[in-house]
Structure formats: C-alpha cells, structure tokens
Image (cartoon, rainbow, N blue to C red):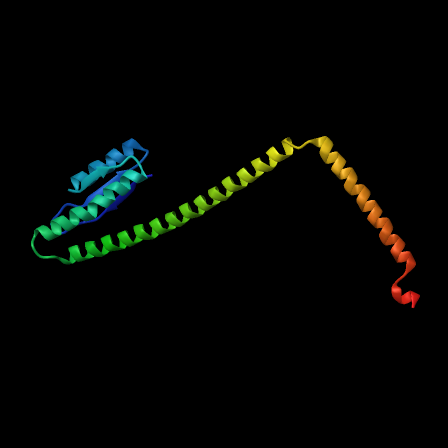
Length: 162
C-alpha cells in the first residue's frame, strides 16, 4: 500500500513521502511525481514516514520566514506545529500514566511475591510433630469446652432456679 503525503509550499516544490512494500509501484509513483516537479522522499515504514513529516513543517517555516515577512502559509504552519506539539504532549501524558500504573502493579506484585516467599519459608521450616501435638491439644480443649457448654445448657439458667 502506498502512502503519499504532501504539504505544498508557496514558491517551493511540493513534497511527497512514499512508502510501499511494492518496489515497482513506488518507483512508478516516484517517477510520475518527479516529472510533475514534486520533491519525493521514500520511507521504509511508518516511523520513517513520521520522521520525514516532522522535518516538513520546519522546512516550511524556514522558507516562509527567510523571506522576511510571515505569510499565511507560515501562520498555518505555526498553527499546525502547535497542534502537533499539543498532541505529542497529550500522548506523553497518556504514556506517563500508563507507566505509573505499570510501576504500581509491578511494585504490588513484588510485595506479594516477598510475602508468599516468606509464608512458604515458614511452612517449610515448621516442625510437623510439634504442630500435630498443638492441633491435638486444641482439639481436646475444644471438645472439653463443648461438653461444658452442653452441661450448662442442660442445667438451665439462674432464672429457672428462682
């Protein structure tokens, strides 16, 4: 797929940035545009196209202001450049927020990992015979407490005696 991007300048040749996976198509398009007195640049991919586009407004502003008086084109170029910078700032804020969220998630995951490792170490270092004895003692105490409660319930309350 070919991408042709132009930004005509007053008194300057039109500029096109071409990118296409089809080399023969790109050559035919380049030859046609060159015959029409276009300045043609070729790019391997999207990032390179953006680099060419980033250079185009600066070239336009230099050409506009080198004449000594700002023209309508230079005013339009400045407005376009300002809009582009605002867009870059917005995207930077979005990326910064994403990085902050990723950092917070990473910190949380690291903290959880440390806690889980500590719990695993505690489990591995446990004396199973001692824990079994403690469990048996706790079960015996619970059974005794259950019997006491059942006996108290059979006796009734103090109000029943009165």
